[in-house]
Length: 126
Image 1 (cartoon, rainbow, N blue to C red):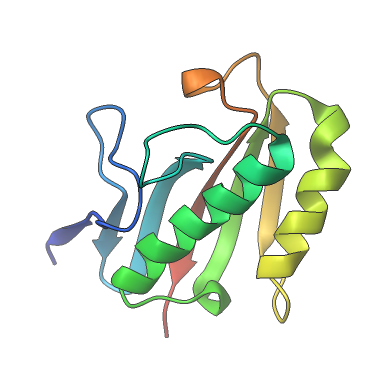
Image 2: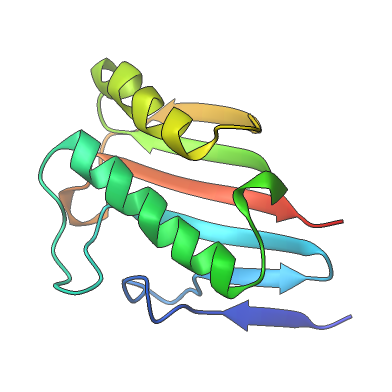
């Protein structure tokens, strides 16, 4: 079974040598998504704006690959400040309304481009 590279034109270009996602059979592995506006290439300002834009970028990637939010089985959220955890949870719950996948939330010293939020995920489709 060959791996399939998925890059979405509706999400910002990768800022390094990686793909938006890799599909292996019925599984999709999505690279970390920052709150970068794909139209401008600029990072949104607040953690809420970054989380919303990050989720919109994530949504574009998974939909283009033929997956949905209900296919998400595991997410990892990276935050530069755990004081933003509750605010990111509010945004997170707007996207995962019927299904709550397994999740880790990790505090990191820094993210690319000065980001405050990043999320990666694993999806499995039946």
